Amino acid sequence: MGVEHGPVTADAARAVENAHAWFEANSGWAPPDPDELLEWLGDGVCRCPDDCLVEPHSWCTHGLASWYLILRSLDG
Ligand SMILES: [Zn+2]
Image (cartoon, rainbow, N blue to C red; front, side, top):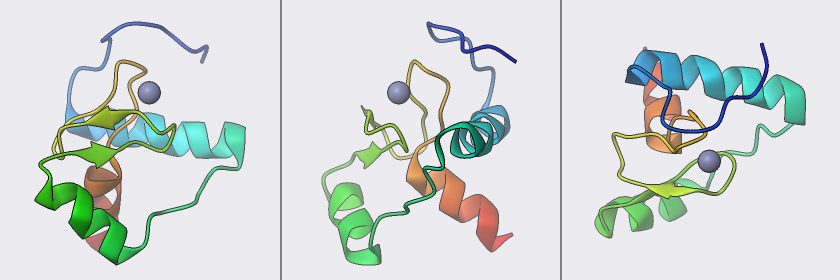
């Protein structure tokens, strides 16, 4: 799967899948500290794995889910 540009992601589940694919390609599994995540959420924002700033329940224009969505999906 190639990297696509623009808001091509359909939903949060797909964005989380995209993020995991991104980790495999970038060896980028570096989740934020819980304190850092809480600080972002307190500001009404969240970072994505590629450092884009988005709303907590959203994903960036590269289709990567926010850390909030990724970590929540791991909690099951
Ligand atoms: Zn991005």
